[in-house]
Amino acid sequence: MIETARLILRGWHEADKLAFLAMGNDPEVMRYLGPALSAADVDAAVARQNGFLERVGYCFWAVERRADGAFLGFCGLKPGAEGTPIAADVEVGWRFARAHWGQGYAREAAQASLDWGWEALDVAQIAAITTIDNVRSWGLMERLGMRRSWHEDFDHPTAIDRLKAHITYRIARPECATGAGLNQQ
Image (spheres, one colour):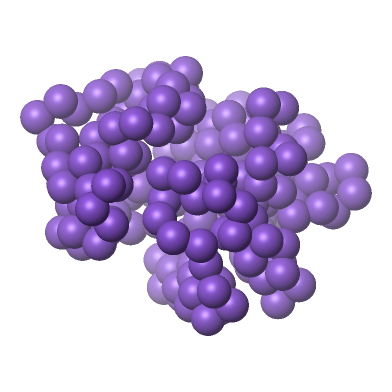
């Protein structure tokens, strides 16, 4: 578990699934991600993330607001997707319910995830991918200090046609990765 001033990043619980399903059926949330999610999709995604957590010790963690325990979305690290330029890398990623956009939660959670990665993992860099049109996502990547890896633009092998064009961002390990302000439990 990772704690920040406002958030808890943790493994997934059964109780998260309903809020995740609602988020996955919001057309604005899914605009750059693909079709709406079914209950079976949500079950598979939660099982996949908890499987990563068990196998490698990290995943796209469920994000909970400390003040009230509300499920906000997810953020964290996972092994890069097969068939992409980041397949051999650690990927940082996030998705939040629309009601929680614009409040700094994604940046806070993503920075905590990166800090955790630098402390816990022996990797030289962390990568991220998004569709070329998802300006909010790649804008956050840039605010986190990530830089576009222009030569690694690609067509995502599992994306629907209108979302195939993807871009890659990377961030190198800081010279002094201390994880200041990170409370790991």
